[in-house]
Image 1: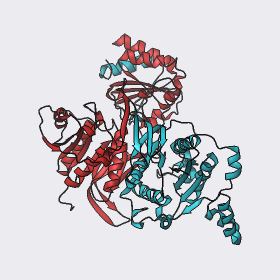
Image 2: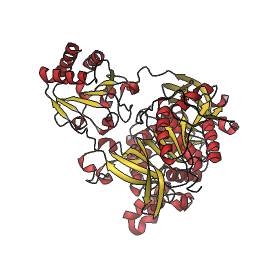
Image 3: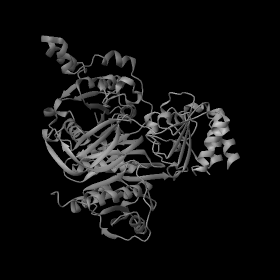
Image 4: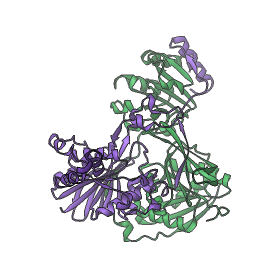
Length: 341
Length: 292
């Protein structure tokens, strides 16, 4: 493929029970920006069964064309048939960029596809940009490549990765890091129906049993989050965090240390191994602020940190630093809020 | 032996306990300042294999890793936990591999071993956190992949049944073998057995023997082999790998830039932990509509 016939930007759409995953819509929003920079189209890969009704929502987030593959063998999700359908589409249409959410499904599907296509795949990106790349070692230059930005080494460094082989440039992208665009319900696009060419080879894995429930707590949409860390001290004392959240109309989050201690459930964990959030207000109580935690909340619009240790790293990302004991500060905050509001 | 279970493991820098001197002033990682450890979820994969062996003595557990000569340490640790055989894939030509080149090299290793009924890997390694190598090995070997496995329920007679995690729940999957499983932190890896430590701490690769034994090396290697204490060492050529598909040459992804994480909030305001200071803060947040 030559450089003047650049392919489109593709997004794999993850759906469960006929509901589109939030990360897929976030990716469409960013794909729209990347495609506009490159002067190409945004196309979505929608696989499953009886899911045609989801198409208009994809258009509304900036998608120009939806490849729609409906087949009973694509429901529920299993890797092999999905990989086959996607691989066949890649070979036929040659996209420039292919993005997956870095979800459990995305992270098992994308490598299977990348391996078969023999192309690069960067996991868990937190940012994507278009730029030129000078490969000094091999003395080659590349125009308009996808800069794939991701944390590495347990979040201690940020690396910018470029795929130098044939397209597509493949990435998985963390949930919650790309800004969700504003949908335009009037926006229309195309649908391209795809007939999956599946054989017995792709259907050897049988789902014997499947038990799942939607998350009861989802911090990703929360506008106000009050999060507690190890400094809260005990499960009983965590009630303070819930009290403040309730008073100001927020959700409760936690650092990994608090989740590992068993004080709150994993759904509330913010950070590299939890969810990434960008609320209007994030109040970090008794959280020291490891990079693993701050990676998941540093984009919050306003951050208040409460900590007794003046050297806690959390203060370096905070807009408001309260160096004090959360046991007295939080009740004061509740009192002050109730008095003003 | 009736069944061969191959476990791929990795020696990794301990990224979860990064101390001050582990980062260079340029923001890159000083690997040598970090202790090298057995990748945590690979221990879970090894444990899953050893549990199969506990249930069925006809299971042979082979452990393999790709890495520098020092990576033999995780193989010794595997032998001390109960593995039967160990293979070190080591060659300068493997260096600089991304996940595509790594999975190709490991798939060559699996092919060379011959009949393998099950391949187990940890879900991901803590130095890269990509979780890509397992599925990519499976694709290269054209076998099914079952990811995020918590428990192997049944194995044998050409079939494997697992319970695996999915978003918000779990699934029970049944697959023909051979298959590749990636294992999550859902079992308790056994400690090294005292008797096995006594025996296998002496296990060595041929290179390790040659480094110390001088003229007598070949005899010693033969003696270790007879005692079942030789860790096999394969070069890229031994594994039958195509040189254009390994190491840097076989890696489509290039690192453009690396920087250390410096997160700053820009301007930061100190708030006194007094009723007056807090009242003023809450007032400010309400008036700029952050609250209320």
